[in-house]
Structure formats: structure tokens, C-alpha cells
Image (cartoon, rainbow, N blue to C red):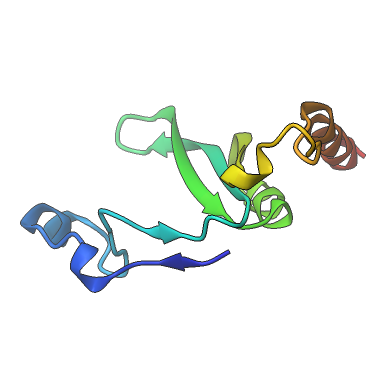
Length: 118
């Protein structure tokens, strides 16, 4: 998968500069190749507020270029819930193509979840 960003797309407002991690860059747009699958990985983490002595959850979304990368991302320490969605290229959405049949995706997750429990 190919992801491109142009320097002119970067967000450089005062709020971002003042409060964000200095190593973190934010962009209004990214360019993705259209001939590859993309996976949206949604991870929920449990956080602790040490000042108030309470717990809460934070959910973030990440973009992965392969299913293997998406599954590896779900194994990050501290993840309490995960979901993976697939975005397919337009050409793959034809009737003669059964590569993205729901039962195939379901089978992948069933195998992955079985491996985790053992």
C-alpha cells in the first residue's frame, strides 16, 4: 500500500503546536493507492486518571495496509477491545469476485481468536 502526504496538507495551527506531541504530525489529507485493500483498525484502551483515581476508555483508529499488519496491531499491549474493517478497491467489488465474501473474513477472525485463547 502506498500512502502519500504533501507538506502543504500538514496542519500547523497554534493549538496543535501548543498541545500536541512534538513528534506527531497531523494532515488534512492523505493519498492512498486505489488498487490495494486497506484496513481500519479500531482499538480501545483502558486509561487511568491518577488524579481522580478512576478509569475510562479511549478508542483510536489506525490504517493498515495488510490484514497481517492489522491483526498485529490488535496485539498491542493495553488493548481491551478491537475491531477491523476492510476497505476494498472499486474494481474488486464485482459479482464474479468472491475474494471479499463475508464468510471468508469471518473465518480469518475465528481462527485468530482461537489462537489467542490457547
